Structures are given as C-alpha cells and as structure tokens.
Length: 110
Image (cartoon, rainbow, N blue to C red; front, top):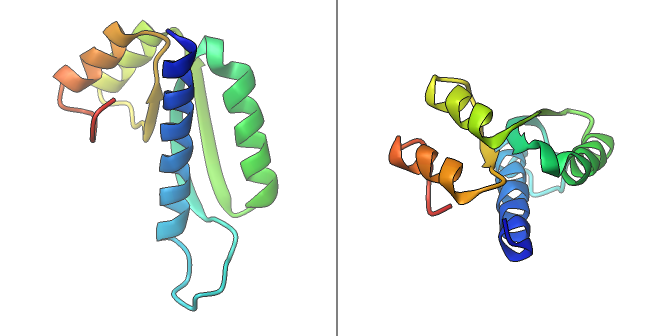
C-alpha cells in the first residue's frame, strides 16, 4: 500500500476513534476524556503505528476501551465477513479492503 494510502487509513481510523468518544461525552459542554469502546482490525504491518496510537489514547482516556486486533489483511477480512465486530479495518492492500466493501460492511468510501 502506498504511503499516502496508509496515512489515509490511519487518519480514518483515528477519526472513527474520536467519533466514538465524542458520542459518549456528556452534554455539559465541558471537555471530558473519551469513553466507550472501539475495535480496530489492522494489518500486521501497522502494529507499531496503531499500537502507539492505542497506547496514547488509553493513557489520555482511561475510560475508553481500545481493542486492537492485528493479523494478515486477508485473515482479518475473512474474520469481518464472518461476523467479527470491527469498527475500523486498516488493510495493507486494496484487494482485502474491497472484500469488505463488496460485502456491504463498510460505511463510506475506503
């Protein structure tokens, strides 16, 4: 996957994490730590990047539950199409991302 695509996937993943947190904040208008749960399925090649991001989010938001599942993109795509719950899928290639899109399991454009 091109560097530009990897950055786009990382940005989309982070956006999804923050959206989940924003939905769980109180309506008082006071900035509160994120809360809730997000499950990320990411290619093994993204362990360092997503691991670091996950750790930083956990430190800053102790009430947030960040579940990271790493593996080969094809294995992760199969798990998702077989019903595994994933809020974010960061594939190392377009072929496996397209499998998720073709199965109507993606929101928005990958």
